[in-house]
Image (cartoon, rainbow, N blue to C red):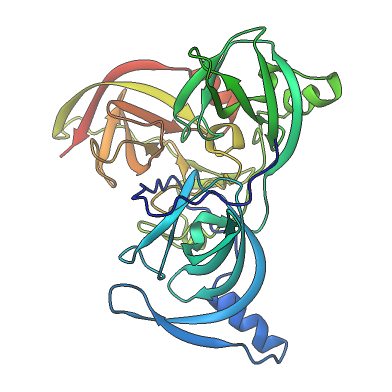
Length: 356
Protein backbone atom coordinates (compact mmCIF):
# COMPACT_ATOMS: atom_id res chain seq x y z
CA UNK A 1 0.00 0.00 0.00
CA UNK A 2 1.33 3.41 -0.92
CA UNK A 3 1.85 5.69 2.07
CA UNK A 4 -0.51 8.63 2.03
CA UNK A 5 0.95 12.11 2.08
CA UNK A 6 -1.89 13.68 3.99
CA UNK A 7 -5.41 12.75 5.05
CA UNK A 8 -7.48 15.90 5.30
CA UNK A 9 -11.26 15.83 5.37
CA UNK A 10 -12.55 19.17 4.15
CA UNK A 11 -15.75 20.76 5.32
CA UNK A 12 -16.17 18.28 8.17
CA UNK A 13 -16.21 18.94 11.88
CA UNK A 14 -13.58 16.59 13.32
CA UNK A 15 -12.45 15.83 16.85
CA UNK A 16 -8.76 16.18 17.64
CA UNK A 17 -7.27 13.71 20.09
CA UNK A 18 -4.23 14.98 22.00
CA UNK A 19 -2.55 12.03 23.67
CA UNK A 20 0.91 13.20 24.70
CA UNK A 21 3.36 16.04 24.36
CA UNK A 22 5.76 15.22 21.51
CA UNK A 23 7.76 18.40 20.81
CA UNK A 24 10.42 17.29 18.29
CA UNK A 25 10.55 20.14 15.76
CA UNK A 26 12.35 23.46 15.84
CA UNK A 27 10.27 26.16 17.49
CA UNK A 28 10.18 29.90 16.83
CA UNK A 29 13.01 30.69 19.23
CA UNK A 30 15.31 28.02 17.80
CA UNK A 31 14.68 29.14 14.23
CA UNK A 32 15.26 32.84 14.87
CA UNK A 33 18.34 32.24 17.05
CA UNK A 34 19.87 29.96 14.40
CA UNK A 35 19.38 32.63 11.74
CA UNK A 36 21.03 35.22 13.98
CA UNK A 37 24.02 32.94 14.61
CA UNK A 38 24.41 32.44 10.84
CA UNK A 39 24.07 36.20 10.29
CA UNK A 40 20.92 35.64 8.27
CA UNK A 41 18.05 38.08 8.18
CA UNK A 42 15.07 35.90 9.00
CA UNK A 43 11.82 36.56 7.18
CA UNK A 44 9.12 37.43 9.68
CA UNK A 45 5.54 38.65 9.72
CA UNK A 46 2.66 38.78 12.16
CA UNK A 47 -0.78 37.22 12.06
CA UNK A 48 -3.79 36.70 14.31
CA UNK A 49 -4.61 33.48 16.18
CA UNK A 50 -8.38 33.52 15.74
CA UNK A 51 -8.98 35.01 19.19
CA UNK A 52 -7.70 38.50 18.43
CA UNK A 53 -4.15 37.90 19.70
CA UNK A 54 -1.15 38.91 17.59
CA UNK A 55 1.33 36.14 16.75
CA UNK A 56 4.88 36.55 15.43
CA UNK A 57 5.80 34.22 12.57
CA UNK A 58 9.21 33.33 11.10
CA UNK A 59 9.81 31.62 7.76
CA UNK A 60 11.29 28.13 7.63
CA UNK A 61 11.43 25.42 4.98
CA UNK A 62 11.46 21.81 6.17
CA UNK A 63 9.56 18.55 6.06
CA UNK A 64 7.80 17.40 9.23
CA UNK A 65 5.72 14.38 10.20
CA UNK A 66 2.58 14.00 12.29
CA UNK A 67 3.53 12.35 15.60
CA UNK A 68 0.08 12.26 17.22
CA UNK A 69 -2.74 9.81 16.59
CA UNK A 70 -4.50 12.63 14.77
CA UNK A 71 -4.31 16.40 14.80
CA UNK A 72 -6.17 19.36 13.36
CA UNK A 73 -5.08 21.81 10.68
CA UNK A 74 -6.60 25.26 11.30
CA UNK A 75 -6.98 28.38 9.21
CA UNK A 76 -5.08 30.41 11.84
CA UNK A 77 -2.56 29.46 14.56
CA UNK A 78 -5.16 28.84 17.25
CA UNK A 79 -7.96 26.39 18.01
CA UNK A 80 -10.50 29.23 17.95
CA UNK A 81 -10.11 29.49 14.18
CA UNK A 82 -11.77 27.33 11.52
CA UNK A 83 -10.69 23.70 11.45
CA UNK A 84 -9.78 22.74 7.90
CA UNK A 85 -9.31 19.03 8.50
CA UNK A 86 -7.34 16.32 10.24
CA UNK A 87 -3.99 14.67 9.65
CA UNK A 88 -2.91 11.36 11.17
CA UNK A 89 0.19 9.64 12.52
CA UNK A 90 2.93 9.43 9.91
CA UNK A 91 1.44 11.94 7.47
CA UNK A 92 4.02 14.15 5.77
CA UNK A 93 3.69 17.94 5.83
CA UNK A 94 5.75 20.73 4.29
CA UNK A 95 6.37 23.48 6.83
CA UNK A 96 6.81 27.08 5.64
CA UNK A 97 6.67 29.06 8.90
CA UNK A 98 6.78 28.71 12.68
CA UNK A 99 4.88 30.88 15.19
CA UNK A 100 5.92 32.12 18.62
CA UNK A 101 2.79 30.61 20.20
CA UNK A 102 3.71 26.97 19.49
CA UNK A 103 2.11 26.55 16.06
CA UNK A 104 3.51 26.02 12.55
CA UNK A 105 2.22 26.84 9.08
CA UNK A 106 2.12 23.72 6.90
CA UNK A 107 0.84 22.52 3.55
CA UNK A 108 -0.09 19.17 2.02
CA UNK A 109 -1.63 17.85 -1.18
CA UNK A 110 -5.17 16.46 -1.14
CA UNK A 111 -6.70 15.21 -4.37
CA UNK A 112 -4.31 17.44 -6.35
CA UNK A 113 -5.36 20.48 -4.30
CA UNK A 114 -3.00 22.13 -1.84
CA UNK A 115 -4.30 22.68 1.70
CA UNK A 116 -2.46 25.34 3.72
CA UNK A 117 -3.05 25.96 7.41
CA UNK A 118 -1.63 25.83 10.92
CA UNK A 119 -0.93 22.91 13.29
CA UNK A 120 0.42 22.70 16.85
CA UNK A 121 4.16 21.98 17.08
CA UNK A 122 3.58 19.36 19.77
CA UNK A 123 1.82 17.21 17.17
CA UNK A 124 4.89 17.14 14.91
CA UNK A 125 8.27 15.46 14.68
CA UNK A 126 11.24 16.00 12.38
CA UNK A 127 11.59 12.24 11.91
CA UNK A 128 9.11 9.66 10.68
CA UNK A 129 9.08 6.57 12.88
CA UNK A 130 6.87 4.64 10.43
CA UNK A 131 8.89 2.71 7.88
CA UNK A 132 6.89 1.63 4.81
CA UNK A 133 6.34 -2.07 4.12
CA UNK A 134 4.31 -4.09 1.67
CA UNK A 135 4.13 -7.75 2.70
CA UNK A 136 1.37 -10.33 2.78
CA UNK A 137 1.95 -12.19 6.04
CA UNK A 138 0.25 -14.66 8.34
CA UNK A 139 -0.69 -13.92 11.94
CA UNK A 140 1.11 -16.35 14.25
CA UNK A 141 -0.71 -15.44 17.47
CA UNK A 142 -4.05 -13.78 18.30
CA UNK A 143 -3.76 -10.00 18.67
CA UNK A 144 -5.92 -6.99 19.45
CA UNK A 145 -5.74 -4.36 16.70
CA UNK A 146 -5.26 -0.78 17.95
CA UNK A 147 -5.79 2.52 16.13
CA UNK A 148 -2.40 3.82 17.37
CA UNK A 149 0.84 1.92 18.09
CA UNK A 150 0.73 2.31 21.86
CA UNK A 151 -0.87 0.22 24.58
CA UNK A 152 -1.63 3.35 26.60
CA UNK A 153 -2.99 5.56 23.82
CA UNK A 154 -4.19 3.03 21.29
CA UNK A 155 -7.87 2.13 21.35
CA UNK A 156 -9.14 -1.27 20.27
CA UNK A 157 -10.58 -1.29 16.76
CA UNK A 158 -10.59 -5.00 15.96
CA UNK A 159 -8.75 -8.28 16.32
CA UNK A 160 -6.85 -10.77 14.22
CA UNK A 161 -6.54 -14.48 14.94
CA UNK A 162 -3.79 -17.00 14.44
CA UNK A 163 -3.43 -18.03 10.76
CA UNK A 164 -5.29 -14.93 9.50
CA UNK A 165 -3.78 -13.40 6.36
CA UNK A 166 -2.99 -9.68 6.65
CA UNK A 167 -0.89 -7.11 4.79
CA UNK A 168 1.93 -5.40 6.68
CA UNK A 169 2.01 -1.82 5.37
CA UNK A 170 4.51 -0.30 7.79
CA UNK A 171 6.66 -0.86 10.87
CA UNK A 172 7.14 1.38 13.89
CA UNK A 173 10.53 1.12 15.62
CA UNK A 174 10.48 -2.59 14.73
CA UNK A 175 8.08 -3.06 17.65
CA UNK A 176 4.71 -2.40 15.99
CA UNK A 177 3.35 -3.22 12.55
CA UNK A 178 0.68 -1.32 10.66
CA UNK A 179 -1.57 -3.82 8.94
CA UNK A 180 -4.66 -4.03 6.79
CA UNK A 181 -7.00 -6.89 7.64
CA UNK A 182 -10.51 -8.15 7.03
CA UNK A 183 -13.33 -7.45 9.50
CA UNK A 184 -15.96 -10.09 10.21
CA UNK A 185 -18.24 -8.43 7.66
CA UNK A 186 -15.58 -8.65 4.96
CA UNK A 187 -14.67 -4.96 4.92
CA UNK A 188 -11.01 -3.92 4.96
CA UNK A 189 -9.65 -2.08 8.00
CA UNK A 190 -6.28 -0.73 9.14
CA UNK A 191 -4.59 -0.71 12.55
CA UNK A 192 -1.52 -1.67 14.56
CA UNK A 193 -0.42 -4.92 16.25
CA UNK A 194 2.91 -5.99 17.80
CA UNK A 195 5.33 -7.11 15.11
CA UNK A 196 6.04 -10.23 17.18
CA UNK A 197 2.50 -11.42 16.38
CA UNK A 198 3.33 -11.76 12.68
CA UNK A 199 4.99 -14.75 11.01
CA UNK A 200 7.85 -12.82 9.41
CA UNK A 201 11.23 -14.09 8.20
CA UNK A 202 13.57 -14.70 11.14
CA UNK A 203 15.81 -11.75 10.31
CA UNK A 204 12.84 -9.39 10.62
CA UNK A 205 11.07 -11.01 13.55
CA UNK A 206 14.21 -11.04 15.69
CA UNK A 207 14.35 -7.22 15.58
CA UNK A 208 11.31 -7.02 17.84
CA UNK A 209 12.00 -10.19 19.83
CA UNK A 210 15.50 -9.18 20.96
CA UNK A 211 14.64 -5.73 22.37
CA UNK A 212 15.96 -5.35 25.91
CA UNK A 213 12.74 -4.78 27.81
CA UNK A 214 14.69 -4.27 31.05
CA UNK A 215 15.81 -0.97 29.55
CA UNK A 216 13.39 0.82 27.28
CA UNK A 217 11.71 -1.74 24.97
CA UNK A 218 12.02 0.74 22.14
CA UNK A 219 13.27 4.18 21.24
CA UNK A 220 13.14 7.09 23.69
CA UNK A 221 13.17 10.65 22.35
CA UNK A 222 14.39 13.75 24.13
CA UNK A 223 11.99 16.43 25.33
CA UNK A 224 12.12 19.33 27.75
CA UNK A 225 9.73 17.95 30.34
CA UNK A 226 8.27 21.40 30.89
CA UNK A 227 4.54 21.89 31.08
CA UNK A 228 1.49 22.57 33.20
CA UNK A 229 2.83 21.04 36.43
CA UNK A 230 6.53 20.88 35.52
CA UNK A 231 9.46 21.81 37.73
CA UNK A 232 12.85 22.52 36.21
CA UNK A 233 14.58 19.18 35.66
CA UNK A 234 17.73 20.38 37.43
CA UNK A 235 15.64 20.98 40.55
CA UNK A 236 14.46 17.38 40.85
CA UNK A 237 13.21 16.51 44.33
CA UNK A 238 15.93 14.83 46.47
CA UNK A 239 13.64 11.78 46.65
CA UNK A 240 13.94 11.31 42.88
CA UNK A 241 16.89 9.67 41.14
CA UNK A 242 17.50 9.03 37.44
CA UNK A 243 18.36 5.56 36.13
CA UNK A 244 18.69 4.77 32.41
CA UNK A 245 16.94 8.05 31.65
CA UNK A 246 13.93 7.21 33.85
CA UNK A 247 13.03 9.24 36.93
CA UNK A 248 12.74 6.92 39.93
CA UNK A 249 10.63 8.21 42.81
CA UNK A 250 10.54 7.12 46.42
CA UNK A 251 7.29 5.36 47.42
CA UNK A 252 5.06 7.44 49.68
CA UNK A 253 2.69 5.65 52.02
CA UNK A 254 -0.70 7.15 52.81
CA UNK A 255 -0.87 8.72 56.27
CA UNK A 256 -2.94 6.80 58.81
CA UNK A 257 -5.04 9.90 59.47
CA UNK A 258 -5.52 10.88 55.81
CA UNK A 259 -9.03 12.01 54.83
CA UNK A 260 -9.93 9.53 52.08
CA UNK A 261 -12.86 9.31 49.70
CA UNK A 262 -13.59 5.88 48.22
CA UNK A 263 -13.70 6.19 44.41
CA UNK A 264 -14.65 2.56 43.86
CA UNK A 265 -12.97 -0.38 42.18
CA UNK A 266 -10.55 0.40 39.33
CA UNK A 267 -8.72 -1.79 36.83
CA UNK A 268 -4.99 -1.23 37.41
CA UNK A 269 -2.47 -1.63 34.58
CA UNK A 270 1.17 -0.56 34.20
CA UNK A 271 3.20 1.30 31.58
CA UNK A 272 6.76 2.53 31.00
CA UNK A 273 8.21 5.23 28.66
CA UNK A 274 8.79 2.84 25.76
CA UNK A 275 7.48 2.61 22.23
CA UNK A 276 5.46 -0.49 23.11
CA UNK A 277 3.57 1.30 25.87
CA UNK A 278 3.61 4.92 24.72
CA UNK A 279 4.07 4.87 20.98
CA UNK A 280 6.77 5.78 18.44
CA UNK A 281 7.57 9.17 19.94
CA UNK A 282 7.72 8.10 23.58
CA UNK A 283 9.88 10.40 25.70
CA UNK A 284 8.83 9.95 29.31
CA UNK A 285 6.83 13.19 29.21
CA UNK A 286 3.23 13.10 30.43
CA UNK A 287 0.19 14.71 28.85
CA UNK A 288 0.43 17.51 31.44
CA UNK A 289 4.03 18.18 30.40
CA UNK A 290 5.85 16.90 33.49
CA UNK A 291 8.45 14.16 33.42
CA UNK A 292 6.85 10.90 34.56
CA UNK A 293 8.25 9.47 37.81
CA UNK A 294 7.93 5.94 39.13
CA UNK A 295 6.09 5.44 42.44
CA UNK A 296 4.39 8.76 41.71
CA UNK A 297 2.83 9.20 38.22
CA UNK A 298 -0.41 7.59 37.10
CA UNK A 299 -2.41 7.93 33.89
CA UNK A 300 -6.13 8.48 34.41
CA UNK A 301 -9.30 9.51 32.66
CA UNK A 302 -9.27 13.20 33.73
CA UNK A 303 -13.08 13.32 33.56
CA UNK A 304 -13.08 10.75 36.39
CA UNK A 305 -9.95 11.76 38.32
CA UNK A 306 -8.85 15.37 37.60
CA UNK A 307 -5.19 16.14 36.89
CA UNK A 308 -3.22 16.87 40.04
CA UNK A 309 -5.38 14.64 42.25
CA UNK A 310 -3.60 12.49 44.81
CA UNK A 311 -4.97 8.98 45.10
CA UNK A 312 -4.15 5.94 47.20
CA UNK A 313 -3.70 2.55 45.57
CA UNK A 314 -2.88 -0.36 47.89
CA UNK A 315 -1.70 2.06 50.56
CA UNK A 316 0.62 4.05 48.28
CA UNK A 317 0.09 7.64 47.15
CA UNK A 318 0.15 8.50 43.42
CA UNK A 319 -0.53 11.73 41.48
CA UNK A 320 -2.75 11.97 38.38
CA UNK A 321 -0.38 13.50 35.81
CA UNK A 322 -1.02 11.60 32.59
CA UNK A 323 -3.78 10.25 30.39
CA UNK A 324 -4.15 7.95 27.41
CA UNK A 325 -6.62 7.09 24.69
CA UNK A 326 -7.09 3.63 26.22
CA UNK A 327 -7.41 4.93 29.78
CA UNK A 328 -11.16 5.29 30.13
CA UNK A 329 -13.49 5.52 33.13
CA UNK A 330 -12.44 3.24 36.02
CA UNK A 331 -8.96 2.37 34.75
CA UNK A 332 -5.61 3.62 36.05
CA UNK A 333 -2.21 3.05 34.42
CA UNK A 334 0.70 3.15 36.90
CA UNK A 335 4.06 4.34 35.56
CA UNK A 336 6.98 1.95 36.11
CA UNK A 337 10.67 1.97 35.16
CA UNK A 338 10.85 -0.91 32.69
CA UNK A 339 8.60 -2.90 30.44
CA UNK A 340 9.57 -6.11 32.23
CA UNK A 341 8.45 -4.61 35.56
CA UNK A 342 5.09 -3.62 34.10
CA UNK A 343 4.52 -7.10 32.71
CA UNK A 344 5.50 -8.68 36.02
CA UNK A 345 3.05 -6.52 37.99
CA UNK A 346 0.30 -7.33 35.51
CA UNK A 347 -3.35 -6.29 35.69
CA UNK A 348 -5.67 -6.38 38.69
CA UNK A 349 -8.75 -4.74 40.23
CA UNK A 350 -8.59 -2.85 43.50
CA UNK A 351 -10.24 -0.08 45.53
CA UNK A 352 -8.91 3.42 44.87
CA UNK A 353 -9.18 6.33 47.29
CA UNK A 354 -8.92 10.09 46.73
CA UNK A 355 -6.97 12.15 49.29
CA UNK A 356 -9.27 15.08 50.14
